[in-house]
Amino acid sequence: METNKPLTFGPVNSRRFGISLGIDLSPTHKQCNFDCLYCELEKQKTVPIQTDSIGVDNYIVAVQEALLKYPEIEVITITANGEPTMYPYLDELVEKLESIKKNKKLLILSNSSLISNQKISHTLHKIDIVKLSLDCATKECFAKLDRLDSSINFQDIIDGMIAFSKTFQNELVIEVLFVDTINNKQSEIEKIYTILQHINPTRVDIGTIDRPPAYDVKPISYGELEKIAHTFEGLNVTIAHRHKIKLSKNLNEIEILNLLEKRPQTQEDLENLLDENSLNTFHNLLENNCVTVRNQAGVLFYGKSK
Image (tube, rainbow, N blue to C red; front, top):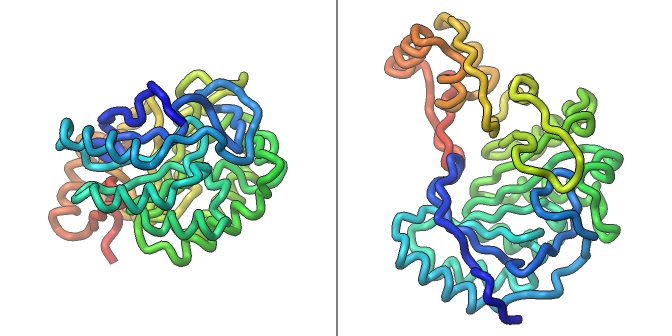
């Protein structure tokens, strides 16, 4: 298939992955096995396979041209107007990208729908950073929010994510997008947390709707996202939200260390949470090696030293 549509886009300066060059594996129209209520693309009937595909060599030429033009690129991101793992030549594409990317990292953004497919799983194991979506933990929630194609079984997604995490040696990021009245119920949050504990990803990104959605659904507040983040105790959690609340709490050393022990915090988290005196206290703890810092898939997390 030929197209005049651009095959790459960017670079985009992503706060969570760095300077990224995007690759669109479905540039002409949406091809997806989900029809998520919150999708920023137009509503469209799900499809089980991708039928219109661009050849691998076309993408390689486009990526090589972009890398020459934009040497500052840090990450090459495989995505699509739909689901990138539906691209029938994904394994060949990944192999060829690996041969030209040099010091760049390769990232894929997937809805997790085909993670239980052994061929897909094998390909994903070759990628530096795999970002998978997990919006729901129950069949009812999946059917209502993600609106799966009939070819997809929700339990296969959960089982496949857990199995993949046991053998994947690179960076695994799980994204959970919350929609008001659907997956922000306490029972659903607790079940999602249980699954996340089994997966034990490098990082968890939680967020809500921040672009016009395909359907009439509503976001949740930053305050609610903050409460959910604290529920996900022991995990590296980032909160994606355009309108963050400056809490400016006054915490002492013990309170800061207790906070970092329960859930590692990013610099952005700490700046939103702590007042100026507390931030000075935090930096003293860091200088005295009471606090550790780790790079988790491009984001620095601070935790309590053991």
